[in-house]
Length: 194
Length: 192
Image (cartoon, rainbow over all chains, first blue to last red; front, side, top):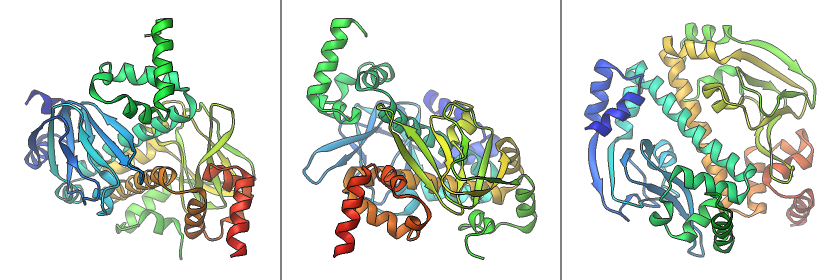
C-alpha cells in the first residue's frame, strides 16, 4: 500500500472523507509484461494509476506499423482518456512493457463524485492540467529538440528503456527512423555524451 | 445568443446566475489590433483571455525557425498557455491576433480562487479541460492518420468561414503544409 500512499499524497485536494471515497473506488491489479490495459477499438470504462512498471500507448497504421504515442512511468495516470470522456472506441492500444502494478477505478463513478463533491472537481482539474502539461511538452520536444537531444531526454527519464522496448519502437517514439537512431547511439557512445 | 461567453462556460453544465456574475467580475475587456502579440515565447503567463471577437493563434518555432500554428482560436475560445499558467514555466508558444480582436482578460490566480468556492464553475473548468485534451488528441491522431486534403476538409467542416477571416498561409501553417500544397488541394477540390 506504500505505492498507493504516494498517489494519494499527490492528489492533495482529496482529504479526509473525500480521500476515503476515492480509495473505495480503487482496486489493485498486477499485470505481466505484454498484457494490455486497453485495446484499440474498446470503449474504455476505467482509469488507471500506474504504481510500478512501464506502460506505452501506441497507434497502428494501416500498413501494420506501430507508432508509440506515450510512455508512462510511475507515478502517473494512464488509460484511454479520450475514450472515457467521449465514450467512443479507443484509437490506441495500452500495453505493459514490464510487469506492472496498477490501481484502477470506474471513470464514470469518479465523474459522479466530481458533481457531488467540489474537492473531486478540483482534483480532476489538477489531474487534467498535469496531463495537458505532459502532451504539451511532448509536442514541444518533437518540434524544438533535435533527435539526439530527444534520445538523451528519454534515456534520462527511463535509463533502461533499451531493455524494455524494441529499437524500432524507440525510433518511432522519437519520430526518427531506426537507422537514424543507431547513428545517434553510435555518436553518443563515441563522444561519451551519456 | 449563440457563441456568447455564457454559452461557453455553460457547455453541458448549468451555471447559477450568482456564479456567472462572479465569473464575469474577474474579467476586463481589452481590444488588440491585427498582428498584436498577446504574449511572447518565453513569457510566464499570469493572465488568460476569452476571445469575444476576431481570430487569434498560437505559434511554435520549429528547429528550422519556421513558424508552425498549434491552435487557431475562433469565438469563443480561451487563450493562454495552460502549463505556464499552472506551473509558472516559460511558455514555448507565442500568441498572436490574426485579425483585430476583442478579448476578456483575467488573472489566473483570481480564477483559481473562484473554483475553490463555486462548484459549478469548477465543474465547467473540468469540462473545458476535457475539451482541450480531446481536441489535442484528435489533432495528433489526424496528423498521424489523415492526409493534408482530409485535414483541410475537416477544418473547413469545423470552421466553414475560416477562409474569409484569415490569410491562407495561416491555414497552411496550421495544417502543417506549404502554401503551395494548400493551393493545389483547394484547386483540386473546387474543380470537382
